[in-house]
Image (cartoon, rainbow, N blue to C red; front, side):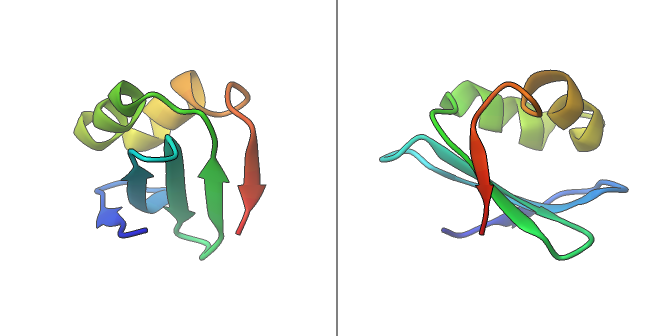
Amino acid sequence: MERTPVSSSNIASVGYDTATSSLQIEFLSGKVYEYYDVPESEFDGLVNAGSPGGYFHANIKNVYSYNEI
């Protein structure tokens, strides 16, 4: 999955696969997590947020199932 860089103090890049509704988030630590059954609107909100990290904590973390990849 191709990821797009974002301006964040915690997140390096994000990507979305419309076929599987999967969201990938690469953190500045180098760890990458894939979140499942995420609506595309959440991806749009994340990449357009003034604070992607804040958006992630408010709308994605602890909401969707995930795995470290």
